[in-house]
Length: 350
Image 1 (cartoon, rainbow, N blue to C red):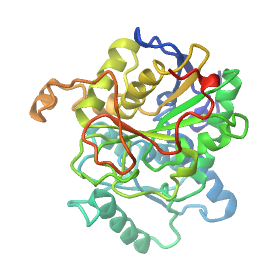
Image 2: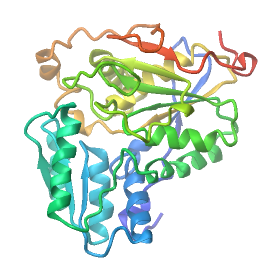
Image 3: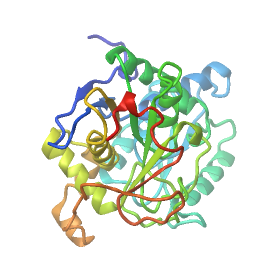
Image 4: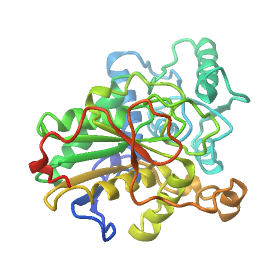
């Protein structure tokens, strides 16, 4: 299929039925957002930039400035640079060498903050971003955490899912800025009123009321602040996995499903796999897999790194623990935010 430019290839990602393990009863379909040019957030970059150009917020030749630790940064570099804009990315020392190389090779200006702020790395990055906005009057800040164009970017993803599946019973996705899960769920619930939405977060992330642990090793999901784009009214249940569990699940995803992905995808896979054992055979579960594994070759996929972090015994329990909301968790646990599945006959919950 021919395209005029690389940004035109964003979207229309494959939907693949997973093999799962012997416990599975329902079906899980993986939406391979990791097969966008750089990852799932390419959708957000394209949507945000084009909307800003249309509204006049982004003028010709003006720079784009954003805080990002990875995939959104690459998407902004792709779309922004192709449209003739300088792109400034504010990040922190957790940025991996591969992402850093991608950004600099694409012509981005990368600003790495040196120490945490009062609310961890996120607040330090936002402070530096504000300094840059003062240095470059007229610059465009996509504001991934509160820009409504972030969740709107996933209306197309929802449409793609509805074209590929006759029914969707459960949607599972990781939460960071909140746009992908909230935006996709909002669109799907227009047609699937009984859709159950399951969020996947990192232990030590504050999004769903846990105490902040800025030293957590997982990247791509979780946050040290609660983004405005997290629409809690769309979410029925949240699962938290710790670093060891997320890493173990990611390695299982590669070994069992042959999908080389990051820990956001691995965590989503673990949750979707377990959910498939809790429902009936007619249940269709969609799992959004946002990130490829190339950013994690020196961490998750590196034996020496795992050993140095004390992650050699990475056991993923068969069944997560159900806890009340606001309970502090340290291992795979989940909380039902809006009660049990409302239609047990439809989903055949066991």
